[in-house]
Length: 82
Image 1 (cartoon, rainbow, N blue to C red):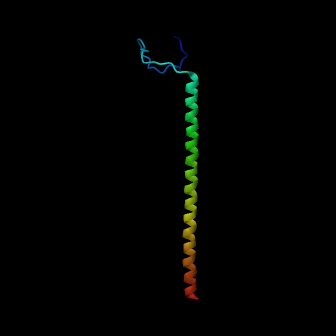
Image 2 (image 1 turned 180 degrees about the horizontal axis):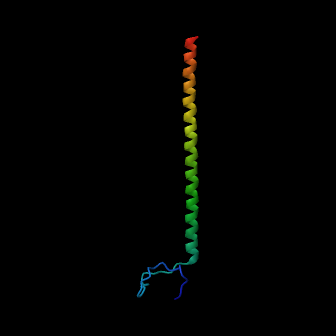
Image 3 (image 1 turned 90 degrees about the vertical axis):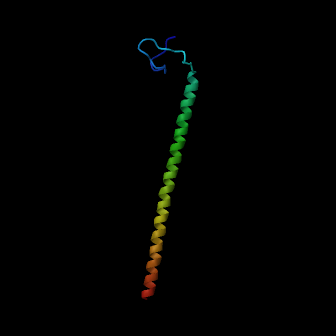
């Protein structure tokens, strides 16, 4: 059987290549698996972006809370001075 270069995933030996462990897989099955890998990768990227956005928003909220706490403290000190 002759196959195009790159379609054989059996280690090529310099003397004689042993194909007894080789199997033939339908191309549509390989294409389907590749599409699944891409789909899952895109899903993972979207989830990672969502996590990143959540962390950024959480830091913004923490900063706002800290700023408001300091403003309250400042107003209390000003009230004491008056």
